Image (cartoon, rainbow over all chains, first blue to last red; front, side, top):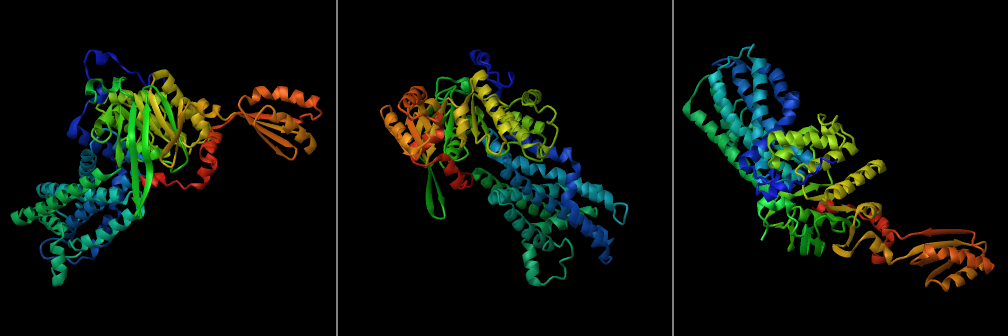
Length: 270
Length: 340
């Protein structure tokens, strides 16, 4: 106990800043928040599988039902959608961790710490990229031995698009958690209600080609649709400029929207 | 003028806390609840102060304003020389805070949380790790730092909460209901730790509690809060001194008791007779009792049983509000946490 608190008065007399009062700045704060968020992921990497249960079920039980399409295997068409679905699932679940921290009290501890509100949101959201990359690697490892051709260059560009998308969805999920406060049911109700329509309206499971006009019109407003179309092209090793650009724009819209809404929610959190 | 960053944590010129007409309203279902109503308070560096009151009295709301979690509706508060609204980050850097919940997230490891908190306070990676190990050792958690927080016992988690609050060696520590939910053994341990922190290191400590025994046992100064107002502010001894001891005398019959009450009435004003039992409330009751027993034996009304009890803080609260604090706790639903 005697070492717990040693007030060092000498530093004041010599005019040196005591180490406890330095302001690390936004970038260091954000990095600190991100590293903290990643600790449980690295300590227990198996946890990334949690958000993958549904996508893997679709991959195993739904993909075999798909008819062969003209240009390439059904798997080649289906996998990019499943990768995007996993990113959406993982990033949209992430607010549940914050809900838990709001309930347990650790979120309050962080609010009283010198970490800026913006770093608390941005650091958390940036972390979403890491589990997304781990999950994509797992999916590609699973499907590559089957009728799926791995085009590494395209996959890497696809990951850049999905990273932006994950950061945005993560930020939105945190905003939802902050708005739900300690009502965990509210978080899950809204999350579950939104995720499946988004997936279906993005053509993840079935192509939108034969869809009626109204459904197409709605899906045109879904940023995930453009992300999925870009992923499909890129995973096939093609780089059509407009499709890829639309994918980036769709992901960037989600990222900006997420960060703006998330930052506002974090500023108001108490 | 707030002190410069350089000497902030060493500052002893300013009061640790100064509030002026500090007020907080909550609006719920279109009704305004005045949680804190014009609080004027000054806490000197080195004080150990307990905010005592029933749930919903405004203790936690006050603490949440002082720790920058919520803004005052009106009035001002300075903590460590900094305004809680205009200089939030300076306040946050200067204080340690142990909230009602757990500081460490349940999916994290305790040591990781200590390190991240130290990093948040601007300590280097090496210093942060050293500090984390030092605190785990000091709080008897050395073997548990690598375990997920969810697997720790309630007492271990509470010790970890306090360790996290002390990472940056704050001069001023806030504890919100620190011993709620702990078993009696862990509660005593915690009180021991808080007292030692105060006596050995001169840390200014402000805690809220609805346990009378706790305020009595550890605080130099007890601020009694009820309905958002300070209704008393003194040492525990000072608060109780005005009330006097409660002397209970049992007699063999009502007749003898009547004689006892008459004789006792010459010594004290507050005497009550109930069947064969006489109760006397008077300052110095313990000193007066032996003579009274002797006097009554001579008068032919021998005392069969005597009990002398010093005043408790519950008596103080009863005297101030007309309600027992124990009953208030049982009857009030804990709304304060939800409101904030």
